Image (cartoon, rainbow, N blue to C red):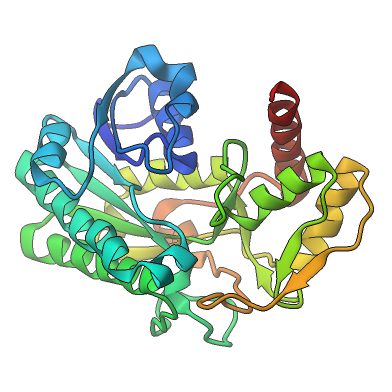
Length: 318
């Protein structure tokens, strides 16, 4: 696809999703500024585009840093955040400083710079444990964690900036994103990255809860497509939009598929369910299709295969 802007800011651009987005923007001929404090992101994630981007090491809690990084950018992709649900439960004040005030800094800097569009990375966590499935954007948010509260707050601010100031802002509610470069070393990593690492190392994983909880896993390349589409989709301005596949997979089934890819047959360990975790989640993606023209293109088995090969190659280099 071809982007309509020539210069963009990606906050959190050294992270998992952010680095894939940055690569895609560079491939489209866009000049990219990456703002990251490297608390969870890795500069090595940007090795393939290191000579083609402007890298600003800094924190979104510092408005002056954000303002400087935003200058001249036509599009802003705000992905920087404390993304771990358990970490926000353990550190609610620290995470709020990043996810609440940091988001305000990015919105205000984008408004001041005259950016044509801002896309905010939100989360399916805003739905909480509402038993109604699939999750639809008009459902009442029922956050179960500080992380979810912070994400829905960011959505409300993004919508207000559209209504009050005429900014083209869109919030994308990511479901469970997976793919190459997702860091398995953090205790707060996504379940697929952890399972991949365990399978490659032939180590049984720990499943929190009984493993029947289900998720909508969406491949990172599809998420990047949604981000690029949202930056140019005026019909989505002021809206919150699900980004998923519409298909759910339970955690026990997920481990069996990954273990099969690795040729590894072992019983899993189980531990008590973690605070803030939800039982079931699957996206309704009709709004994404209508407003963004988005449909997922990478089948789950294909995405898992791509991801497993990356993890296997990465572990072989260690």
